[in-house]
Length: 209
Image (cartoon, rainbow, N blue to C red; front, side, top):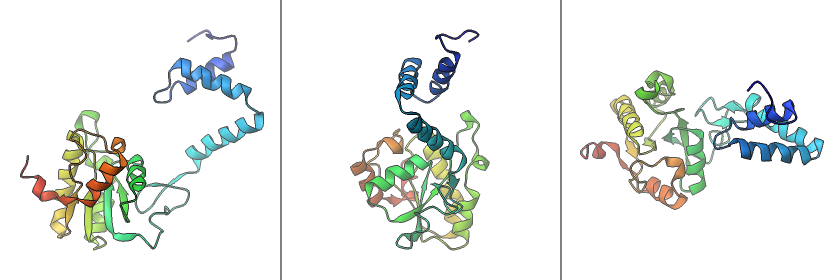
């Protein structure tokens, strides 16, 4: 846009930046910017600092790849968790969804995505080698595959199973209380919790395919 849509180029630029956020159109972006204009400058400064800190100061856990304020996240550093039970998820949002169920007491491994050739995402683009290294080192008694029940999620599940099963560690998957085709983060807490509790051996699902 060569000319500002509004009387202020600064306003227009702020609206354009807010509109780049997922689910935020220009009308919503304008409301947000005008709201900030009405706020106390100190409050806006705190808001800006919080956004800056999210981008610059948040770490990824060196153990599970979850977001953290320190090198090791609170879940991995919690001695009360079962560190030999590893739940493999696609993203940080899935960690949050499972934690909200209060049904899981192990630790996580965040892949950072799923295998999707259509999107140019292959196994080497995900945190798979570090997962296999944990299993190979004898650090796991069970690996739970808790990926979304989509085609990409199932493909990734099968790939992980082939990489892990050779080490003799039980590989399970969440029960199909989560409907096929559903993204894990959108499952309700009760259904997701039951799916974790009632998990099944992954190899039994291969007979369905």
